[in-house]
Image (cartoon, rainbow, N blue to C red; front, side, top):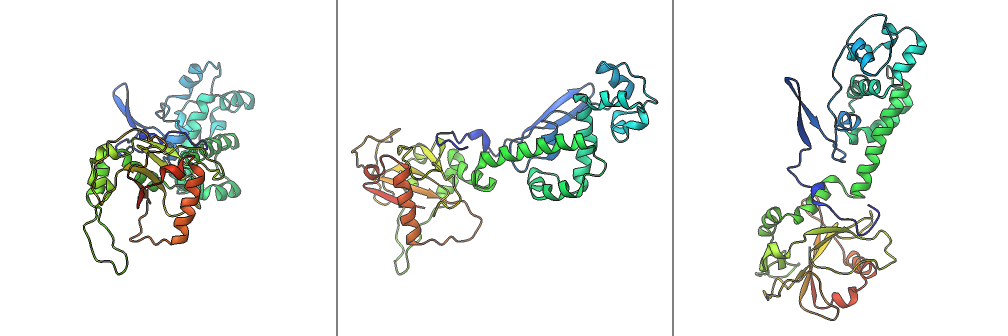
Length: 328
């Protein structure tokens, strides 16, 4: 996600998307879990590319299916053959033809590589990320070198894709931020917002800009990544857009969006898709930070740094930010 205008798609974060489908093969129903590009994806799911495990047929049937006129030394099920192919096809030249077949490699991945990874407590992409160095250094025991290289390539590619997809954010942060793209979830959050008075300030009935108006109309409906290069103005300030940080050292917040109106004064401003330059109507910037901590401390210097970053990121920041209040 290196481009700033790449959409922060809803399907990436929908909580009820399980990635599970059922496939009927004869009288048996096999459940296939499709990889979703997450660090929580199961290694088998990744190695099988979301396909059902290859059927456990006899070696003789398999050889005919892939068009090889080879008579095995003895017959057996494919899930057993892949554990010791030399016992079934002693001829090295013939065995090489079989081992190089893509169809055979799927059996190896499912019945050799996956069990091996399970014994090493590698069940997800996250665990592969943490332990791949040790596995590559210490050897892969009974897994054939070629099968291991294929597996490593698939897992590393999936890991890279998942990392690019979420950038510097954890999966928890992505899902928390994206909940504001779904009005049902966001309304529950907004309903629980309370004003935190400053030290020495008496409690008052201040309301969030989101609670003061029609929440559904004010929530963002699409997402966009803030530019990695903070030295260039790449964006225009828009209502209805969730802007998400794309660098590690982004201060104060993980994401933000703009809302028309001020929460405390309760004025009603007609919601528009975008603002026009020079229109200094009341507006609010809503800063979001995803955290599991009970509290989050910040400093004035970090807020000043954030303002400087936003001024460089948005072409029209100086004009748009006039008459704007801040919420986090």
